[in-house]
Length: 178
Image (tube, rainbow, N blue to C red):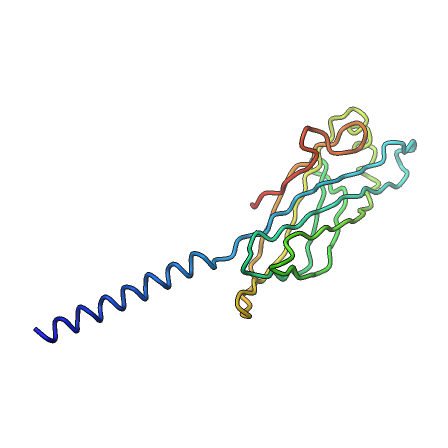
């Protein structure tokens, strides 16, 4: 009788510890960051199709995790018009603390001269769409412990109006995980 009570008590303690571990894991499990293009500017006044051009964009990186910092490796941004590469850009590595949830990256990309003519024509018609691909590796840091590297890839479509800016009501484009 005495052994059965001790055995049941031990099972209760093990069950409680398992439930506590599950709750801690669920509450501290890191969330992927959000990437949003909030501004985009492409010149519309370039008269010569062979002339070089560049565009500017603002990328907002948001850490949704209040308990974890995120360490980003170099972020590769690729912009395509239809199947043609318009340009790409590398954002240098940075870290985002748990108390700092937003980072804004403002950058400029040179447009591939071979694609510029077709893109400029589509922009003047208000029908241009750029496909955006983002890829990087991240590490989470929770309670002074860094995780392994996690590769993440995001993509989105930036509709461009005839004024060379993001068209639509929201005027920003959220990138979604692949």
